[in-house]
Image (cartoon, rainbow, N blue to C red; front, side):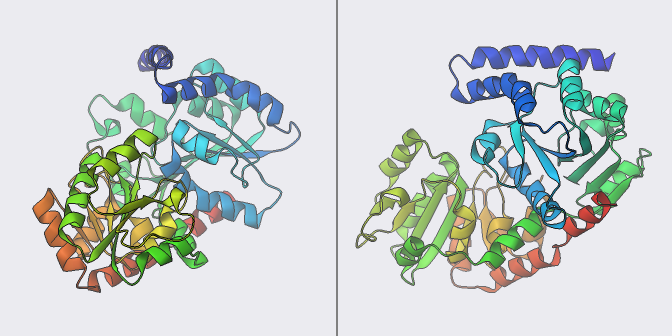
Length: 405
């Protein structure tokens, strides 16, 4: 019964995506991508080859799967990778990802689409990242006898799997060959429901940020902008974050701010610039060096934030005044402390960083001002952050050992 309800629901949702696509560019990309996915698959897949299928909802989940994909390719260069995304924010950024042989949108999770994908590709193993549990694809893979893994997943008591009405959803977890979870609490919670094919491997994002840190990339424009100043790097920010950060910048003439908003479309950048009283410049507009007196640089390009964090004295990670904070590990790996808004409880690494004293959560400007004032004069919290990240590296090796059996 619940499966029927789900199938009706997925079609209703698809109808609303269709309606939204008439006026929302992101919805249009999703709809067009889903509609084209199976045809793209047919033209791109090598019918004589086996594939390992990785699925990520969006860019953040892709970054969790990326260390596993790349280590798998290094250990077995002939392995072919099928990579699917649900969200345009993942697909549009990584559709040319060189370690994947085929990159497409995930087709809508209907029974017929699931059968078409699973029958259209010779899938050796399937890996779903973090919170991805698509029923029809899982059932189709199981009927085909494909090993299915979940990596970097994390479970909490308040999730639907563990509600009194969640039996059908819980059964989805039983479709997996093995679940690699982030913490002991997740494993223990699953075991109370009779799910024992579980390993606590940790979060592969630690491996990803560690690898990035070791690459030691440099950004000459950012180095020039810093000029030995106290520097705050604020990443993946939203408007409420930006209002607080700009207020702090206005009151502290000895500080510089590198601001990397989550949304970099023109309207949002113009709004940020309208709030800035201090001299500022966009990263993309720098031509002949940084003009004298510039105190804020707006990062209006994609792909450099994880390197920009290395120049910070203190970092701020956005999203905490909205749905939830973005990736704190990209900052913490560089031995710098982290500040973020109040909505962070769903993220274990953020809770750990706060508990260790390597991060401070703030509810408004007064708390943000106090946090920055303290952290800009005391570097001990940053060292704690770096040691924490280093202590959590190793999930990828554990997962690869299982996948390569």
